[in-house]
Image 1 (tube, rainbow, N blue to C red):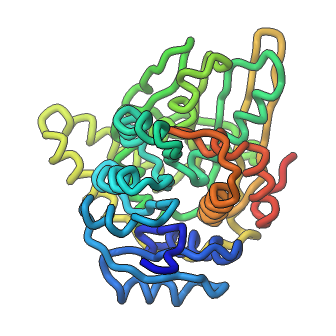
Image 2 (image 1 turned 90 degrees about the horizontal axis):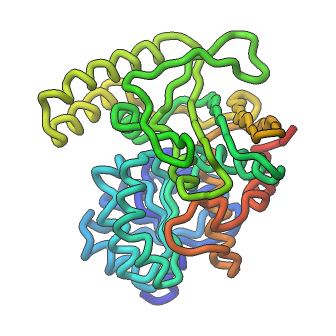
Length: 364
């Protein structure tokens, strides 16, 4: 393809895809907007401010077609989920085409599978494979790395408090991952949370006690699993108590019972149905409304600190992080290859600065 942009955004129709397009436009990065339905892609682009420099390409969701589309590009951004059901052909196609791969998943089982199957192959080609280059779970890693700047820190207790309505794709993904094994790191080993864990937590800046779930366990324990600096790492996500938490806890309990008799495929269909029953397109976030907090309590034997990130608009942050990742790769600023968190690939302070420049973060 002549004059082919270096970036492909696959799955641009949804809310997150449009935000990625918006932040690519802010950085004047041209891209291919890819998906199955040209009309839907064009309608999505028409809603993106900033006059994105986009070429529309239709493609079927199979490895051969995706590989052909990706050839000549440098970066593939995958926004098509649930990733545990749909992601692997995109990873394989990016690898075959010689492209860096970045996605927005929050599904730990998928990311671990892609790490184990393809991480070394990406590294061998000097390519990076980044999952969760998004508010969840990159924001927590930024807080963790800030805490680990202090000598002697070896234990991290990370809490997300997002104030945002989930997208349709996110709803399907989080119901799926909340019902699967959820990991934390304890004494240098990965362990799993008990099924149907829901704890009361105190959130900085709030008087009311919130309810918190492991929410899939986060990626931070997975990324830090072999990091000698970190002995312990737990991640939870907090929400005001109410109908959403009640619904999720009930579904987690139901899943625990269904898993005794149903196959993996049947269980995937169950979580998809639950997600579809409550999913809806959220309104675009407003920085003055969608206030968000990341808290990281960090301890060592004789030291301790708390890092609190005062941020806003989780989905806008995802758009900003993806665009900054593209900007840095295209500018020759990639710091690591293979399966990596965005913080290792680009530097946690650099990502923090990018969020601040986009008006999405102030640190205290």
